[in-house]
Figure (cartoon, rainbow, N blue to C red):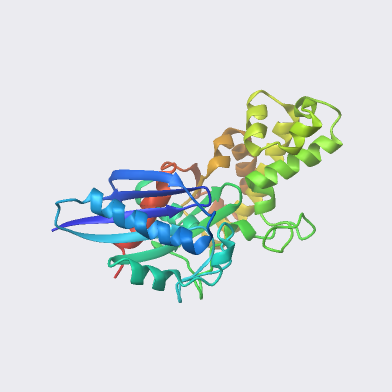
Length: 320
């Protein structure tokens, strides 16, 4: 009997799923927009229908054992299998995800936080392959992360551990969506870069990106800041340098606390790698403890958008 894994990456913008072999090859994958227009429960019902259809078409005529892994944005109480205030799915706070899936899908199913799934995917088939002690960081609209110790994701007492984006770096810093101040997320995310560029423009002497119209500035995105940096824009380069400094402080905490072999950084913001990573590494070298800093490698993710699919599939593979 063949064994197949179905890895599902539930994002705020897109859903991705793939049929994956036990050795980590993606045989088939699909992507479609996340439809929240009818609410979170309807979205979940639609997800189940998509998974069932995808499994049926993808394994037609093959006698097989199938396991499903699902990575969802936001904290999950892993003990109870319940979503806790998911940022992209606010009406699903307290939703019994594990119980729901067990009722709707007659297949063995694993659930995981999306950043943990990214981290597991990079450990299974990506930049941290072969490592037993490593960390993953996703730089997107927010900052997510996962911590692997002795080959296992660190979930914590309730499954809510590994919130890398909410390390407090500056107690007097900007307000974060979590309610705290000065978290890594307010400096190293796409939304943080946007905030910093607008603040930098207010203090600027009139160079570079500040020449955009006021209307353009109100709509500016982190992608546009990246494009400006590629053109040598002075203000954009300063913002990425500041972002790298704060990211470096976050990495120092990970290096000192967990002594990882590697830290893998991915997400859309990591496209600007060359504009922030040297500053981040410089801070690590200056501030991390000597033994830990000399062993850790800070690397860019390898798996791209497939990391979440692979990590969710890996979680299913490891179901007992």
